[in-house]
Each structure stands twice: as structure tokens, then as C-alpha cells.
Amino acid sequence: MKIVHLARTLLATLAALAASTLTLPAEAATSQTATVPPAAAPSEKVTTIVSLTFDDGDATHPSVARALERRNMRGTFYVNTETVGRTGKLTRRQIAALAKAGHEIGGHTLTHVRLNELTRDEQGPQICDDRRTLVAWGLRPATLAYPFGAVDADAKAVARECGYDAARTVGGLRQWNCPGCPATETPRPKDRYGIRTPGSVREDTSLRQMKQQVLNAEKGGGGVLPLVFHRVCDDCGVYSVPPKIMNEFLDWLAGRSARGTVVKTLQSAVGARYRPLPRG
Ligand SMILES: [Zn+2]
Image 1 (cartoon, rainbow, N blue to C red):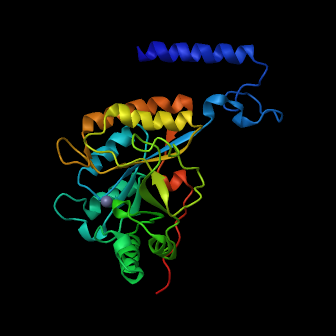
Image 2 (image 1 turned 90 degrees about the vertical axis):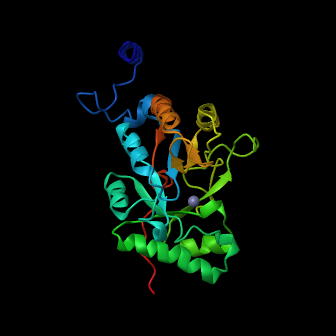
């Protein structure tokens, strides 16, 4: 079925090209013409960027990472460095392998605290020592995720001072309980230290709801849609998604590329750069 569909799509594309007065896209042209810009092919237009983010350095993450890689996608994995290597958590070796495979590794504080309940002096070590450890492990963390999405102005300032170039909250984008919220962030979010998402995907989130968030983004004209996941396993808590549902979602998502919907790490989606650690 897939081959028939592909062949039809190809034929339709060729017919459209033949009918148009445009020069073939640069890849297919035998010689470059100066009059037609290479971006003229409409199928190459990216409008919606979905970032698949996974919190808490869970031991189920290497297998979902492989599921992403099989579809030529990369994800963002937020780890708490003090819990690394504990039961049910990623090991340092696994984190290094994720990074080597092209996934983004970001910070999530040392011990998964509610930053808005801490003083600024207490927030410093939670955010900065965590990042310092990641850097000491040879990683280049550019984005942070606030545990529980709990954030205040101090935490945003500390994240910036520690060298993070952007940070992700939880919530603020459109979902069932917030129909008036915007569907996406822009690729250059106004608040780089308060990047919004729909609510975290939970065990009671249906595949249809996951798809709907992407459709909302597409219908809204595109932008950056960061999705928040935790564990990827069967019957393993409120903040989990079964691998079967995840795989179905990824297959469906891969098929959206023809509509200009692509998957990127959050760092790549918002153009966050790695900045060196502050002195001291
Ligand atoms: Zn978390």
C-alpha cells in the first residue's frame, strides 16, 4: 500500500512540475539558475517543529531513543545528575550513548526540586551544580527543564546566569483545559527561559489527544510545539505512556513531514547555543 501511495505522490509531483513554468528544484536541476531560489519547492517548507522532551532521566529512555532514531528523529532528555545511576534511572554510560547518537541532554536540577519554593541562593546550586556536572561529564547542556514546570523570576535569572540559553516549563499551550491558549511557541520565543508546552503526556492521555496537539499547531500556522513525556512503559504510573502508543504516535508524526511538520530537539528548535560555565 505504501509503495502505491508513494508512486502516486511521485507521479502527482512530476505532473505538477511539468505543468508549472518553474525550474526544477536545485537537487534535480542539471544547472543552477539564478532566477529561482532553491527554497521554491513547497514540500520543503517547514512550518511546525515538534520537540519530544523526556524528563527525569528515566531508565526507559534508551529504548524510546532507539524508537526515535529508527524514524530519523532526535529527542531531548532532561536528567537530574544526583539521581543518575540509581535504580530506575539512566546511568552515565547510557547518557553518553544518547548524546553520541545525537540526542540533546539538558539539565533538570540536581535533585528534582520545586525551584519556586527555594530562595535564589538555594536555586543556584540546584541549577548550576547540576549543569557543571553535566559539563564535567563531557556534555554541552544548552537548555534546562524546570522540575514540575515550577518556576519564578529568580529561577529564570539563575538559569541564564548558569549559562543556559533557554529553559522549558510545563503548560501554557493549548490543550483540553486551556482552549484559549496559543497552540505553539515561536521559533524565537519571547520568553526564552519560560518556554511553554501543553500539559505533560500522562497514562490517561489518548493517542488522539497527542495527535490533536500537533494538528492544532499545524492549523494555527505552525511554530514550535514542545511535548513533555516522562516514563515510556506499560502500566508504570500516572506520568507514563505505553511504548505501543508512543510508536503509533511517532509513525503518525513521521508521516506529517509532507505537511511541513518535523521533529527537532528543543535546543535546535529554538536555536539555543551552548554557553560555557560562568566563572566561580
Ligand atoms: Zn521532572
